[in-house]
Amino acid sequence: MSGSTTRLVVHDRGHELLGAVHPGESWAAAARRTVASLHADPVPVDLSGEVKQFRLDHDNRVTVRPMTPGDLPDVARWRAAEHVRRWWPGDGAATLEAVTDRYGPSIDGMTPTRMYVAEVNGRSIGFLQDYRIRDYPDFAMLTPDPDAVGVDYAIGETGWLGRGFGARILWAWMPRALRRFPDARCLFAAPDHRNAASLRILEKVGFAPGVWFDEPQSDGGVATVVGCTLDVATVLA
Image (cartoon, rainbow, N blue to C red; front, side, top):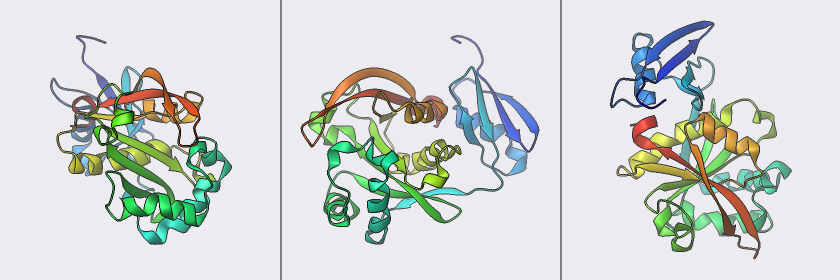
């Protein structure tokens, strides 16, 4: 609501801690201030509504770390899973050799893209990749902000789907992205327009859906995607 105070609530084991965002303050900073005495870091539940919903998770530690060559067998298995392959169809067969050829150079720092593994309580459950969009000129021409940091992600382990960890993984990745690109003003993701689950995850973590565009795929096809943007100053800074 323009001109009004943004409200938030942090859920903690049946209790609701109510707060408000001060002028010039981000949603994340306001949530941390609201629970400062608890020495905990709130994580998002749903940031798409008028009242921003956070919670304290005392049971699950979600982290993002750099991918290593030792992770590639897991990545190949995840990429071959039907729920991942459906939305990554243009990247060819998900054999270990193909996945190594595709992601190995990024793991070694030889491309503008960096690869990460998402973990919950020390268990690897999925992966992410990020990059400055302007480093890929053909893609940059299609997007609203070439200076934004792009991200692609997937939960590979089926047992962890539908449990709220997609938003948690993105939230854990964001500080790492901002350390890598400290001048970034926006984060950007472009899931397939049919991927309702991914679009909802992005909304929950603070991305706003925007323009639809056709993105050429490596197999010669075209995917219609939805450009989703997160304003760093509003949500995170």
